[in-house]
Each structure stands twice: as C-alpha cells, then as structure tokens.
Length: 491
Ligand code: NAD
Image: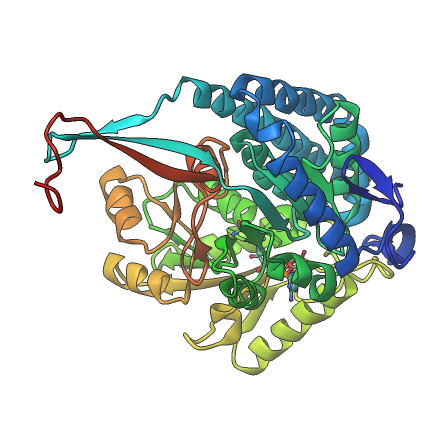
C-alpha cells in the first residue's frame, strides 16, 4: 500500500511524517498505514494546484487533449479493476463483486467526462438574443479554477471519480481529500494519474482527517470551488467555512429515502427491489430507500416474504464467494447503528428480523440485515439517517397518505414507487419532494443523469452535464455593435 501523499506530481512525505492506521472491517485488524496529511500538506497541495491552473498547460489544453488523459485513466482503472476492487474490500468491507462493479463505474465516469470535454471544443459560445439590437451578447464557459473535493467512505474510488473526472474535463485543477476510513484507492488513483503523465499539480491527493486536512481545504482562500459529499452536519460546517471567501460550493449530503409499494405490485419484484434498495453496500448508500411504505392490503404478505428473503442473505467477509452483506465500515458506525436500533425499539419499534451482530461472526463489524416495524412518525429510526442495513416498514391506507408520509422528512435525496399502474407511478413520482426518483426499481444510478437532493440532502447536482457545470464559470461577452454614439455624456 502507498504511504506517501501525491502533491505537484511527486510522492511526498507528509509534513509531520505521520501515518494513520487503516483497518479491515471484516476482522477489525490494522492492515495498512496511510500518510497523515495535515494543514501544511493541504497548503502545499493547494499551492501546486494554483500554479498548475494559473501557469500550467491544463486549462489551456483543448478539450480533446484533456479527454485523452481521462480516457487513459479510465483504461487503467478497468485494466486493474480486480486489484483495485480487492483494496476497496479491505478498506470498506463491501463484497468483492460490488467493489469491482464500482471500479467499472468509476472508469465509465472518466470515459463519460472525456466525451463532455471534447464537446467543450465545439462550444463557440451561446448567442443570447437581446431586446436591444445594438448589442450582441454571447455566453462562454470557463473552468472555475482550483477545486477542492472532500469525499466519504461508502464508495471511495467512485466518489473520487464523480468529482475528479468532471473537474479535470472542465480544465480545473484539484486537491482531493478522501475519508480517513478509506484512504487507499485515492492514492491508487494518484498512481494511475502519474502513470498516464498528467501534468504536475493538476490532481493532488492528501489523505488525512476531516477536522485538520479537511477543514484547511474547506477554508483555504486559494480554493475557488469546493465539492463535498458527506453527512448533513459536516456539510453545514463546510458551508460556514466556505462562506468566508464566498466559495462556490456543491453539497451531496444524507438521505432517508422512501419507497412506496402499492398493492397491485408483483410481490417478488417488490421484495427484490426493497432489499436492493437498503441492503446493497450494507445499506451505506446515501440514496438507500430505508423507509418502506406498503399499501395495507399487501403489507402482511409482503412482510412475510421480506423477512424470509432477508434471512437467506449470506453475511461474511467481502472477499468470500457468495457473500451479499459484508461488515459495516468501522467500529464507530457499528456501535452507532446498534445504538440507534436500541433507542428505536425502546421508543416502540419492533424488530421483525435481525437487529444484532450475527453470532457466528465475532471480530468484524457485522450486523444482520434488519427489518423494523410499528414505529411512530417521530421514532428516530424512522426520521434519522441510519446508514446501515436497516429498513423501516409501515403500512399506508391510500395514495394521499403514502405521499404525505414519504415527504414528511427533512431530507429529499431520493424516493421510489412501485405499482403496475404507470400513470399512478408518474403522479407519485411528481409528488415526491426528492431529486432522484425510481419507478418500479430502487438505486440504479447512471453517470449521464443528474444526482443530488432537495431540502437538507444538498445543494447542486453531480453527474451528467450538471456535474461538468459544477466546475465551469459562465461568462457573458457583450459587444456594442452599432455605428451610433452612446450619447449619454457626449452628444
Ligand atoms: P462525514 O460528513 O463524516 O465525512 C465526509 C468527509 O468529510 C470525510 O472525508 C471527512 O474526513 C470530512 N470531514 C469531516 N469533518 C470535516 C470538517 N470539519 N471539515 C472538513 N472536512 C471534514 O460523512 P461520512 O460518514 O464519511 O459519509 C456518510 C455520509 O455521506 C452520509 O450522511 C451519506 O448519506 C453521505 N453521502 C452522500 C452522498 C450523496 O451523493 N448525496 C453520497 C455518499 C455519501
């Protein structure tokens, strides 16, 4: 594993020469040490990104030239997906097939933004029709400058790709700080960028902790744009830090997303998508549909099938064949989630399945797939993001009640609806107050489509052309295209 930071195109010792422990969530054992980047390292990284933006070739290359680098990065990730996937399993705990899928997705993200970088070359500026015909106005787009990216641990390399690929496509330079819980694949991305000859300072990777390296990056006056993915409390702090310099920010935050299942749904499909919606990646998914609302006539039969299928999920080390539920990412998350379940049950929720560490798996941070029922509107398990394999299921009477309960949340990241009646699905989809809505499925995510939330789930959108726009300034160029004098002071 790599033990140095990547700054200005070089592998560097951290300023304090420190390292921090990286644990395998399946065993709880330390298997690597990552370089401990601190505020001094962030200062160096931002200075390198600033030079690369102000004086280096990167923002001045054509989109096609930048695209060639992005495609080379995509190819390297794909070629190395098995090894990178294994590092991700050790770091995060997820089952290997999911990790390899993430690597393919990350490669696809770089390839997609290569295409958008090329399209920028053809953009000669949008001409804006003006009411005053003496003027001509066109709009051009330019890279924002130095971007900072702070990311979480649930999809370590994929979350990096969602930010690095569009930023580089736009012509920005970047400093990336991965989560202290999963720092390793970001350093592998640095090695890939080095290998493809990315110019020095274009991408700098500093691993370290949020309250030191992260905070310095969020506060740094030379960072023009800050892209953050993480929890609501940290997002709120980031917003305050960015306020001092009026930094452009985008925030992808938490969720507590509903899944409304009408009685005319195919019960097997409903059970499959409910499980995929909340047990995939151990439920550590911002858009996890963790509040399931089932029409009351279907509720008893669906609960029976859901509990039966959840009981069959194979739990274990993500490296083992056939495992569908790995450990949670850390001891802290494990303790926090068990605590939330305990409090939810004390407040009246019932455990229909799971709710504890599987007996056969001591050592790692394992939790059974958990199904809770019978909670009130204000039970914390119904209201707060749990970020684990825990689903709350409740019956509803009619469409109006389902929509009201679905929208009764401070979050608004995602929502899902299932019914054989597509008109009803479309109506409910429009009624949801959420940025991402799935009909007759839950979770499939596409690089081409916008990603982001309403309400406390964030500000702005990633992915697709919206993701590129995050890293582009908009400039109007207006020409006085007329022979007459202006005639205000001088007639
Ligand atoms: P977190 O907020 O604890 O940490 C996220 C990142 O912020 C980490 O890199 C951390 O080091 C850094 N950080 C922490 N304190 C900081 C500070 N004071 N200043 C600067 N940086 C700081 O979140 P997490 O536990 O890593 O991730 C889980 C959260 O992320 C969940 O709420 C989840 O919903 C959310 N998430 C959202 C999306 C999305 O697209 N909306 C995607 C993935 C995860």
